[in-house]
Amino acid sequence: MGSETQGGRGVRGPYRNGVVRRRQIVMAAALAFGQYGYHGASLRQIADQVGTTNATLIAYFGSKEGLLVAVLEHWREETAPETDIFHGLDYFRSFAFLMRYHAKRRGLIELFLTMSIEAAQHDHPARPFILERQLAGISVMVENLRFAVEQRQIEPMSPETMDAEARLMIATFDGLEIQWMQTDELDLEAMVRRHVDSAIARWTARPIEDVRRETDEWLATHQRDGSVELSNSP
Image 1: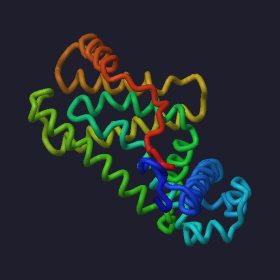
Image 2: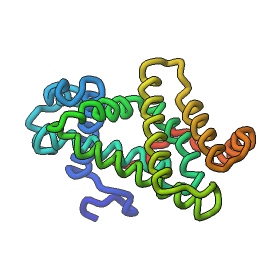
Image 3: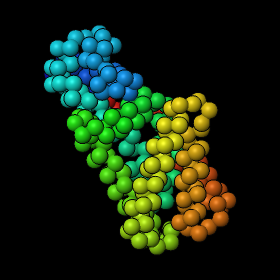
Image 4: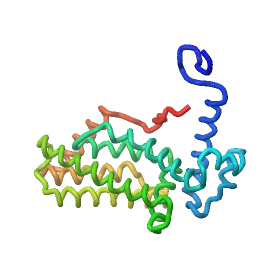
C-alpha cells in the first residue's frame, strides 16, 4: 500500500526517483573526480552530465566535499564484498576476484588512485577517508595473516612481520593498478595472482608449483566474473 509496490518489492514515486537521481549523480561524480581530480572537476561539469543543476547537487549532498564523501563511500561499498567473505589464505587469493571486478569498473580505480595521490595534501577533503582506508586495509590483512597462523595454514610470524607483509602487499597492488591504468597490455588479475601465490609459497615454505595448482582449484570452485552489481541500489 501507499508507496510500496505489490509484494513489498520496493518503492516508487518521488522517493524512488530521488534515490535513482542520487545514484546517477554519484556515478557521474566518480567519473569526473577520477578523470580530473577533486579540484579539477567542477559541480557544473557533474551536473551537466546528469542533466541537472548545481543547486540540485547541493540539495542532495550539501557541498562538493559532501559529494566526494558520497562517492568514496560508494567505492567502499562496491569493492568490499569481493574479499570480505573470505578468511586466511582464501582472503589473499580472493584479490584475483577484486582485480577482475576493478577491470570492469575502470572509473572507480581512476577515482581511488587519483584521490590517493591528491590526499597527500593535508587540507584535501579525501585525506581522512584515504588514511582510514589504508589503515583498515593493513589491519584486515594482518588479521587474516593471524588467522592463517592460528589455523596452521602458514608458518608463524611476528606482529612486525605481519605488518610489513600487509604494507608491502598493498603497495604492490596499488603499484600494479597504476601500471594497469597506463597500459592496456598488463593483465592486472594475473599479476596480482602471481604476487599472492609467491607470497603464499614463501609463507608456507611450499613449492610455488603446488601453490599455483591449489590456487587454480580454489578459484575454479569460487568462480566470480566481476560482472554482477554488488550494491543492489535502486
